[in-house]
Image (cartoon, rainbow, N blue to C red):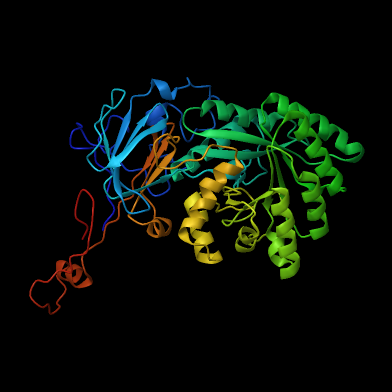
Length: 485
């Protein structure tokens, strides 16, 4: 079936493609809310532009829109992964009711806005991205001049905001951004990303990880002090790269101590090539709450099978989660490669998938698309589509410490509708997407595919002398406002 833009329920006036709520009749294209292209995007709806010229003022803190202030939203005719077609009513940021198609009224316990017709769409729990880099995102070209990455506060805030909106357009309603502290950046980059977090409140849940470079020896004293200052400023996770410190075990010990002091989770970059070091880390991290995460652990795949299996058992016993980066690596580790996800899952390790670099120097073509990450886990690493999607949704949310989401009454209204009727098809070719955060639609991407007439038909239109059998047209499917020939 050709793709199509979702239409309002017959009881609602207007059209989802008309100007008004969405600001433009033009679809935003297959890349989600517009980014560097400058096309009309989320700025039309929320006043938070997805792209700013260099002379634009800093993003300001926008008014917080509470879910309790929003009208109820009725989703009509959505297909679930189990094959059912249902109506879903969202109230106060949660799913109030799920019923068979046509069984739910618009009102419920609160006045409803126009119902949204999701016929032809698959409704899923929204993805989350447990590993992004907001401070360096969209910096592959050095800001357009080919120079080094700018850490000017305005540039970092603009890039972090635009990156989060791009990821939101792909479906990620929660993102964990790793931000370097210390060195030349000091706490400036973190300050800018925290401002982006505040400006996006109500659209997406953006949290930060403070990543100091050195934590041991004389040079590490400053890093340790800066790490504590970062947590006081608002960073919610303690992170870093122990592989880059002269004393990796001492680095991990310092991180765990600070995390224990502040009650924070730990999220560390490591290539995981040293099984003895991982065994020590697992022993040190065991029992730490709210938990320890390692990323990307590509080196585990290069270890002998029996060594990798033993290490996976140790990580599972310690409750350490692993976030793999199937779309490419990031600047936190030197080598590339994806963790052995099937081996880790078989050992009982919680495995999630993140995006890693989003168009920075370590991956200039990074997309930040959780559905692409799930597609790669299924196509390259042999996971079932359901398990691959779990890595970017349920498991990713668990790593972030977020509540579980199911398309059932009582669960948070964090949802993604993708064009299609089966999960495998959605992972294969999910261009059109509708993203729901805290019970309201916060992003919409509509992709339109058109085909020209058959080659014979084109030649005939050009008055080329060819022999045709009657006036036969292949009848290829097309969609759009006009014919393409």
